[in-house]
Image 1 (tube, rainbow, N blue to C red):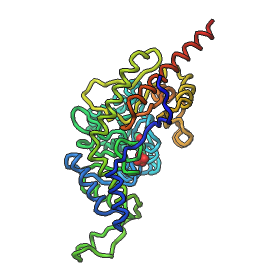
Image 2: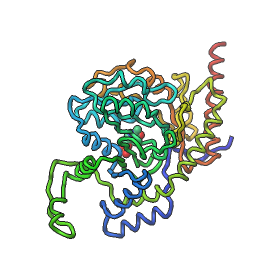
Image 3: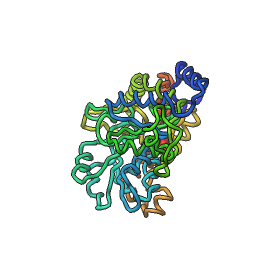
Image 4: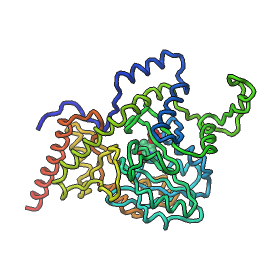
Amino acid sequence: MQKVEKFIPLSRPTINEETIKEVVNVLKSGWLATGPLAQKFEQKLSEYFKGRTAMCFTSATAGLHASLMALGIKEGDEVITTPFTFAATANVIAMLGARPVFVDIEVNTFNIDSSKIENACTSKTKAIIPVHYAGLPVDLDPIYEIARRKNLRIIEDAAHAFGTSYKNRTIGTFGDIQVFSFHPIKNLTSGEGGCVVLDSESEQKFLSLQRFHGIDRSIWDRFSKNGSCYYDVVFPGFKSNLSDIQAAIGLHQLVEIETLNDRRRYLARRYYEAFDGLKDKIFLQAIPGYDFTHSGHLFPICLLDKMQRDNFMEYLKKNSIGTTPYYTPLHLFTYYHKTFGYKKGDFPNAEYVGERVVCLPLYYELKEDEQDYIIETVKKFFRKFMGEMCRKRL
Ligand SMILES: *Cc1c(COP(=O)(O)O)cnc(C)c1O
């Protein structure tokens, strides 16, 4: 086995020289905040999403929060989502005083089990937030069907899903509202950032006010040709606009996204093939029956023997390989337990996967020989572990 000298991280962003030059240009331009590049980034995103409107925020979290506000989610409302996600997905629901109603995941795809959503609906349910975990699209058709019937809104947490497609349609080009993240770990980054994709003009108007202090210039703009220094404040908004520095990075990433994602998918396929012989030790995210394209955002593997998970991560770390257990199901966290009464045992599939999952390094610049080293190290761990088990039995 080849010795790898440097630490292989879980993820690293790919920033090319052109991007660096462009960022330097912005720094020299005298305009660093939201300006022409942020506007251009939104235009290009909108083209990518087949003409639907894309609005940028400082993060997906800010975008999710603003979207829920745009839907009028408030105290006493319920929003359905998965417990197997990053805290942001449910935090934004709780922030508005609403109740995150968790629905368990499918134990094979790790995505929300759409067949269990209807039972979780009450008269207080207002919206559903499905999460395309790791970049595998949720089975959306049944969820949109429920939403249509029950008059619910859908906000897809598409933080993992830039470049994912469901039944030959790219996530973000159809449906209700999608929120993408441009955090450096995600497939497309702007340093930090995110965007909301939506159609409703009144909701777009709300978001543009919400992300900038609730400041409305349109009333004054009517009276002056080049805009005015006067403005009105129509409600106390937040401050979550994307800067031109960030947009400069995002614009270059967007040009490269297919190349970046293709490489991730290629590496993910190599992992799948390499781990084919480990079926008695681990299980992988299953391939659903419908047509899809995975974004290759994360590569999660699950250890059948959950007792070995910490040893496994420790072993990989000692061998210079970064991993992370995405995710601990949210209902097990103190806040969700104390505030909403969730407890261990409530979502057995999320817990089953949550106790076993480890994400392996997956990013554009990961080299084949580095990946081979990761694969060999994983296999070596299981050989070692099996040896110890046999010894214990003797
Ligand atoms: C990263 C992530 C978010 C939050 O994205 P930010 O841009 O960091 O706010 C939300 N949901 C999921 C599933 C994520 O992975």
